[in-house]
Amino acid sequence: MIVGDFNRGKSTILNVLLGQELMSMRVTATTAIPIFVKYGEEEKVLVHKKDGSTEELSLEQYKQRYSLNSKVVQNQIKYYYKSVEKWLNNPNFAELHYPIELLLEGIEFIDTPGLNYTEEGNQKIFSYIQQSHAIIFVLAADQPFTHNEKEYLHNLVSHPNQIKKPIFYLINKWDKLGEEDKEEIRDFLMEEFCQYLDINENEAEKMWGDTVFNVYAKKALDNLKQGKNLDGTGLKEFSQRLDNFILNERLKTELCQALQMAKFVKIQVESKVRERLFILKQTEVEYEAEAKYLQDLVTNISTQVEIIAGKYNEIINDLG
Image (tube, rainbow, N blue to C red; front, top):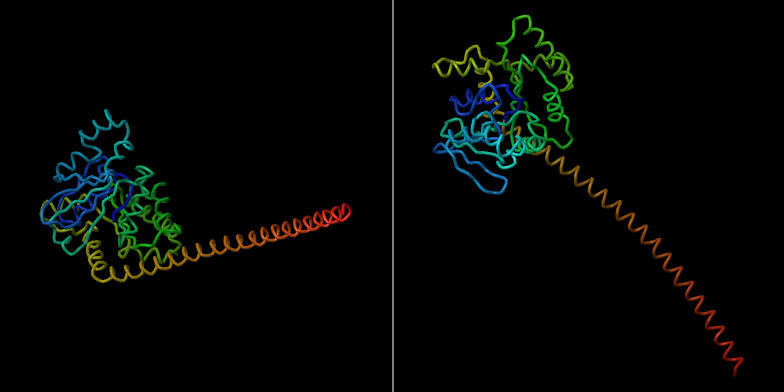
């Protein structure tokens, strides 16, 4: 699953990984709804809507209808929906089916909108994270770790209800920085990783080349278009790392996540059982108190009845 703030190059990176330009890319934000990229015998996009209906489109039709920078969408938002949130209230998510060899192996990618595009959208993305094997978190070297990104990373690694997933960090747009700035930004990123991942500097240093990669997404895509290799773009190394993860680590990750889920369910069940036992115990105490009150009431009434009966007998005897 690919996540990141707006205009970080998520769709460009996905295009490079897929080996061709499928996802829409512009200077402005384009991915309006989450899209699942999976294998299909022929190209088609299925848009699943919140009312339960499904719309089938070609890829080009999808780009025109569901990219935030298309004129069609801009006009819809302006004249009919008034805001992005209202426009997004209709489509839920989309599936892009495409005949690519990488996807034939059962691999799927999820391309997501920018962080915090709507609160509902964020919740939806977190629900999709539960279904994924790993997360590709795209950052930008010229705007490293914005407030949104820090908040999102904190939720990914610290949220109590979040099943932990392997995270690959792709730092894009290094070409926008000078050499001196690159060193400064790298040091800054090291500090942020240490803080948010609760690791030391040596551990953060080892992340580069394993889970952190400096990438040049635009250059990589240009190279692909020109029939060149990905040397010098960082995405060749990441592609190799991703292949290794898919071949050798995915099953282990599935088992670890299943174990985490089992532990999570166990904790939830234990918590619910404790709550129920507490309620039952309270109920038992309350029942005993109520029973004692009723018993005392019955005893008191019985006593009063006996007194009245005695008085009644006395009166009868006096009259007799």
